[in-house]
Length: 433
Image 1 (cartoon, one colour):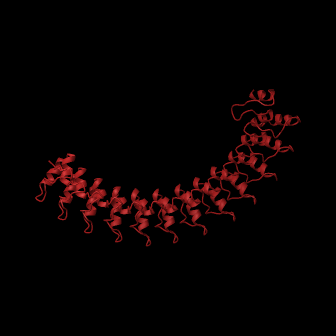
Image 2 (image 1 turned 90 degrees about the vertical axis):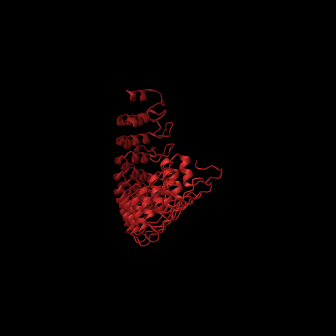
Image 3 (image 1 turned 30 degrees about the horizontal axis):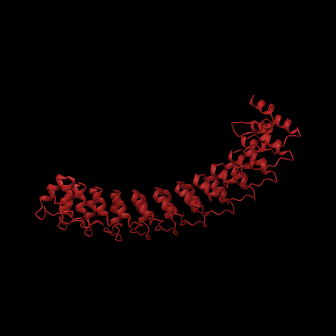
């Protein structure tokens, strides 16, 4: 009934569902009415190239809606231009590829005047759509042509290979890599290659396919200086990390713009398996610090990963006293966060300084007293090398902190010491009392 209205009304009318103001021929193409399309084309006054308000021709509508018969009829008309694009740069071929209409794609590609590489205003060519959407049939049809450019990039610099790798379409990745003119290492505007896109999105199969190529550089970094290995370590993709680490040309110490190495990421997030993999490498540096001077050990201690702390402390290169830019050591972080187990592990070592102080000159005992960590206070006071009267830069001792914060139990523990001074005042002259 709607079609009758489309035909009976004036040459141009408003259709609210898809476009605005299109002709009777647009309506016939939209609904796939072959007989009506033939009848309308016999009316010489009709323009087969007329466009609606969005620049769509009847052929674009027929291709977009998947009406193969109407597409064939329209293409028989000498005035029909199969390469006309709408206002977004979408040609009939682009619409057919996007909507997965293989038959229409084949019909259009039989024409000599159809460019299979024409892209829309976003730089997306038909092959880009097929790769991004996982349309194997359409990708195969396009790649059979010698004039198809498999390296065409969209406005974000993503090639069909990059899109297929990112979305996990292994079959399309293999098809693309069969082309001699493919560049498997082209990076997008963010510096991400197909390999890093596959690694970031946990597509282990595609990572394996790409690593079989001799022309792949596994150390290529994005604009944040993150490599595929960094991404695998950050997101705990064990299989991908293992594949990358099996390569002799991989650099396991590459740091990103924040100085974070793969080991740093794995240590922070508690990915024990990846930490062990990385530490099996002879060329690994287990003590690299980031821009905040945080080492893998400090990050593991800060985030309560006990087993990783133990693993890292087995390495002779790891200094357990290295502090961050605020002068906080792994021991200070563990005490502040009340990680009793990690405090115990660190204090078992002879080379750990239990009196290390933060940038405010606050010691480990002072922090434990401030935050009410009674068990840690007891552990520290059992040592002969801990001074219970050390004051921070504001003159506050552990006893003063405990008194100010109302930690009665810690106050009692401290006052049991013969070497405690209960009257030490801070910079304002305030005593614990």
